[in-house]
Each structure stands twice: as C-alpha cells, then as structure tokens.
Image: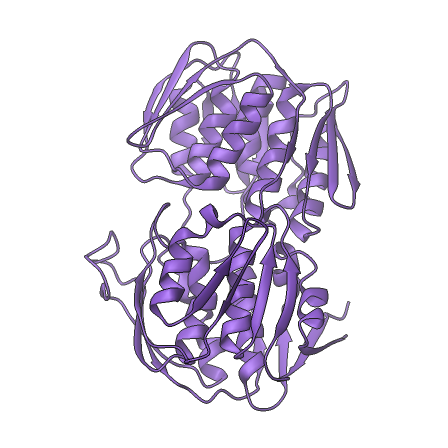
Length: 434
C-alpha cells in the first residue's frame, strides 16, 4: 500500500481563522470512561482525528457500542463485555492500559496488548501496574501484553513517584467503582485530567481535588452514562498561533479558553508577540519581529512538553540564541534531525540548560537544545517520527525556501483535527500525493 506524502511550498504569511475542537488527549480517555456507565454517554465537540477511530475500534472489540457522528460520539455498554483487547491493536497508542481498571470492574479480568504511541521517551507502565496492584489486582506483565485479575478492587493510598498523567488517569478510572476510599498523592493536575474527573463526577463518581496534588476518590456502587462538551485542544491552539507568528502572519484561534494557554501566552509575549484576547478567540502577531528565549518544559501549570515542538521551530526564526530544556520526556527531541535537515540550526545536549537540574541531569538523555536564529530554512524530504514532530515540520516547510516533502503524515492526522484543510484555509500551498 502506498503511503501518502504532503508536498509543501512556502506561500508567505499564514492568515485566517481556525477552530479547535476537544483535545486528542481528552477524547480517548472520555471514551474509556464511558465504559463504566450504565446507559449512553455522549461526547460533544469531539475532534476528527485518527486517535478516535483507533479507540472506537478497541471499544467495539470489547462489546461497547460506539456511534460517531461528526463532532459527536455516543457510547453505550453492550450486553456482553469481552475482557480482551485484541493484539491487532499492539503499539498503536497508549489507550489500552487505561482499559485495565474498567475491564476488571466489568469482567473481573483483563488483557491488553503492549502500549505504543509516539517514541518520545520511556512512558513506563510500571506506575500503572503498581497502582492497580495497590488497588488489589493481580497483574502480570508479559512480552506481548498485560494480564490482570481481581474479584473486587479496593481503595488504597497511592503515592506517584512523578505526576504522570496516564497513571493518574488509570487510578481515577479504577478507583471510582472500587470499594472504599482511594487517595492519590503526587497526582497530575493537567486540564485534561481535571476534565476527565469532572466527566466521571457527572457519571456519579465522588471525587475531591485537594491541594498539593492530592485527589481523593470515594468508590460508589455504580455509574450512569453522562454527556459533556470537550474543551478546546490547547496543543492545537498553541500550534496554530505559532503558525501565524513564524510566517509573519496572524492566525485567529477559536474554541480554546485562555486559561488553558496562560503559560504559553506569556512565553510568546516575552519573545515579542502581541496578543488580542476575547472570550471567543485569541490571536498573536509580531510586527516588530521575535527575540530569543530560554524555556523549560514542566508538568502543569508549567510550559507543556507538547508545546515545545512548534516552539523549537519558532526559535529558529527569532533573533539570537534560544535554549529549550525538556524535563518531562527524555527522548522528546527525537524530531530534531528532521528539522536540522531543513536548515534549522539546533544543537542538542545531555546536560540541563535553561533551568535547574531535572531528573535527567545524570543520564545520557539528550534533553536540552540550543537554537540559533534567524536561520534560513530550505525545503527537504523528511520522515516524521511522531504527531508533534509532524506539525513542527509543516511549520518549518512554511518558511523554508523551496518545496518540502513530508512522509509519515498519518502521525499528524492521528492528533490534529482536519489539519490539511486547516492549513489550506490559512493560505499554505499544500498538496497530497501517494
């Protein structure tokens, strides 16, 4: 089967309006949560991304009825739950591991194949496994996947060694129907985690968000189906703001509330961006040009790790030397060679630059970058390793001299809503080829 490639020619400043829908990182988790409810659940403002199709196929294989109608997804548990996620889904994304807890409640046992997702660094399953064991499950990790059994999950006190988003979600999805009280210490507090907790609360869960990264869950007997509107994707919103800035244009982003972009807005403002913000949209421009910055990624409410890929390309068009220190994933900079091929002057290091020492300071992980701007970029033939890298390559191609050929574009479409159409509407010369 031939793979689709995108051909991109620089076409001057990108201008126009973009509407972002619910986030890729939220929609799939809500789909899993819907397994737990009696009766139908409806997710409004869902994005049209590959991740939704993959998750829907997994749920259907388990016996969950899924109906996708443009921006609405309705899910309802069927009469029989099959406790096995088929091995055909091995390595496609990280969602199967979140199904372990719900399957234990519904079937008393579970098997999920090994997780996949973007190759951005170790996202170990051990946090998930240890949490499930603490809740009373027998868990066995094999070469092909994870087996779990439990006649009944029981509440526990769980302290996470790192505020992992996925592990926090696993505990939420497992503890809501467990017997007794569960306390998570060191929980992730990302907006998508809170959004999932609010959805579970609508389904009848008892969840308390306490200070100091503590979440308290009191197990209930049953949950019901619920309906929710997914908040706008903060990664997409930031990415399109950067698309306007990097090309000397201006993109107006609708559908993502300002409170999800607080740190991002301030970071771009320090670089010289000017913002116009209303309750309905926000836009950024840089008529006086952009200047260098030093940025460190962190867990929420810090600068989000998924924002650093577009930021890295923006650094190449800012005057001076910029520094990026990645503290969340040790292999997040896996996309840099593709950008270097396009003329981005980026050097990566295994020391902590641009911020205090992080948990990778004594490892060989290349997790800091120094970027020189303004770089003259050139079109190239590049293969994209993951979702965010894909978008950053489109940004680089938009300001490069000559045509760029991007391979592996399925990665971008897995995570960004109708990204080809959005870029076309902003004035980018972009075409598809087999």
